[in-house]
Amino acid sequence: MSEVFKNRLSQLCTKVGRQIPVWTQGAGGNISIKEGNRLWIKATGYRLDEVKGSVGIAQVDYKKMVEVLHQNDWIESEAEENYAKLIRETTLPGLGLGLASMETGFHALLPGKYVAHFHSLASLLLYHELAKDRARVLKWLQQKTDLECAFVPVCRPGWILSGKIKGHASLYFLESHGIILHSDKDSLVEEWAILEKDFCKDFNYPLLYSLLIETKTFTELFQQFATEPMPFKCYFPDIAVFSERIEKILEPTSTRDHLLFPFSAVDKDRDMAELWLATQLIFQMCPDFKEVPSEITSVVRDLPTEKLRRQRELNHA
Image 1 (tube, one colour):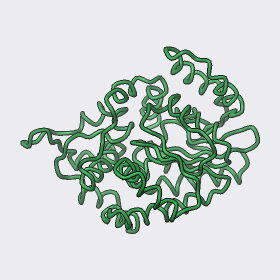
Image 2 (cartoon, rainbow, N blue to C red):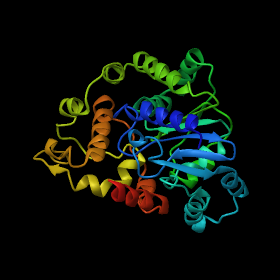
Image 3 (cartoon, one colour):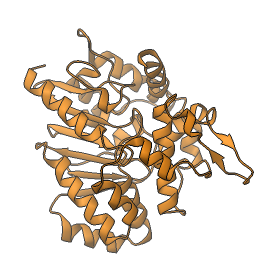
C-alpha cells in the first residue's frame, strides 16, 4: 500500500473513530479505500481509532470477492460459512496486516473509491423519523442535499446486508445499523457531518446536536448520561453480538427491568461502556426507538464472521 493511501486511510479512521459515541462505539464501523485491484480496509476486531500506519489494516483482492459475490449461487444454509471463507481467501497476507471484516462485501461491491460505514446516532434517528413520516424526511433530504440517498430496511449484517446494498447512492441509511458513505471523494465525511447537524436542528434533537458541536471527554459524557439505570435495549447489531459481555458488567437495580453499568467498570471494558452510552443516549432522546428484531439478534452472535471478530478483539486487546 502506498504511503499516500496508508496515511489517508489512517486519517479517515481517526476522524470517524474519535466521534465517540455519536459515530462509533467500540470496534464498530469500517472504512475502506480502493487502490488498483486492492481494497484496503480496517481489520476486524480493531477500533477505528487504533488504525495507525500498518496497524489495524487488512488488504483484500476485492475484484475476486466481487466476482464470487456476483455469482450469488450459494444456498441459504451454506451462505454464511461460504461468505466467511470468501473473506479469509481474499484477504491478502502482509507484514502487520489483519483479516478483513464481515462487512467487506459491500465495501467491495460499491464502485466508489471511498466507503465508510459507522453507527451514527443521527442516521439511526433519521431512519426512525422516516418510518414515522416518510414524505417529510424525503422532502427534507431533497431540500438539504443533492446526494443520492438509499434506505435499507433492517436485516442481518454480513452476507445478507451486502446483498441489499444496490446502486451507486452516496448515502445508504441502514435501519438500526447506521450510515454508509460512498464516493470517489473523501470529503463526503465532512458533508455528512454538516447534514446530520441540520437534521438534529430541524427534527428537534437538541441533545444530539449539542454532542456533535461540543468537545467532551468520554468520561465526562458517561458520567453525565450513562450512570442512571435504564432497560437493556438492543438498538443495533453490535449490542446483540456483545450482549453476554455487556451483561457480565451490568448490575440490577431496585427498579424492575432497569440495569446499571457501574462507572468503576468503564476503564475495564471501554468498548462495552461506549455501546452502553450510545444506547442510553438513544433511549433518552427517543424512548420509542425500535429495537433490532429478535429474529436477527438471536442469530447474529453465531455468525462465523462475528465469532472471528470477537476472538480477534480478545487476542489483540
